[in-house]
Image (cartoon, rainbow, N blue to C red; front, side, top):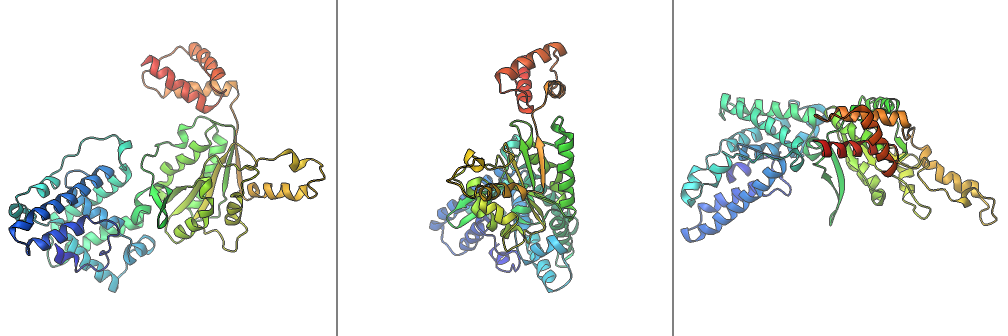
Length: 444
């Protein structure tokens, strides 16, 4: 195996992943060590198997973990070929020849025979991982999106190798490269290609993107009512994805009306069209420029999502946001928009002194404009107000229809819903959903 890895050109840097390197080092040393040193090699190999099982659990790999793992490396390896391929495809030239050479090596790795190693060391772990049966897991417990992409590609490559073999004629390598080129074009490369949403994680080396695995599979149609608001959000997002001019969006209004749900629904609806979402918290606002700089050259459309955005008088983080949206020397790239939700129409709390005629504030007009200028930088502002009684009842009735087996007399449903909202924060979509969840738990 070590002979194969040493000949890789484009796909030789596996970053922090040390599984394949561990196996390679152990197999190389196996030919150089005497029998007394073999227990240490077995220990290292099982350490690599342990790491592979952790990866398989995280991404839901199954059947042949070795092939799924190699496919995962191919799909997540950011190199000069893969980064270019997500934008322009893979063209003829010297780089393509290097890529074909790497594909021949990976073809050999896909069909690597571990039987001699197992016989020599008296182990059977490689046979186990290549005939693996995963325990059924809930979708929330692993990154299902990555799992589907990796396993589909792994199966496609496996079929190619079965049909062509890993022969020296290069036919298998050509077809493997075509499979990867199609994947890079459709989904991109690396974690940004395989995952739909991210948050920022602080590390010793700085901020890094951390994939958000457990994302609620919600669509705009799941939100009852607010059709005008949802249509405005759709139109702006679809224009953005088509490469047309689009605006930053602020969804403001009463709590529990579906502002956050509307934005989260965009992930499921538009991921296949290249939409990615980055969740940013208020205390990370000063890193906004760094985030945009990281993603501005990638072949995706990014929505930077800020939930429940508001600022108190003493907080100045909003100035970072103002500079990035409009006002800094560097233009906001065409592949980035900012979507925010807030219970406040103007985002920043206004005090009485902002508008009162007091001697302490001679330029109160300037102060007020300083605060209001942030919200003015959102080109589209969409209000989400609490429903009236009729609308609240309609939401309750529609949500009740979506629960299988929940059969309640309409009059009783309305009566109980009215009681519920009085003691649970008033009429809103969130209150209606909580009421239906309660009724479902009591009646099913």
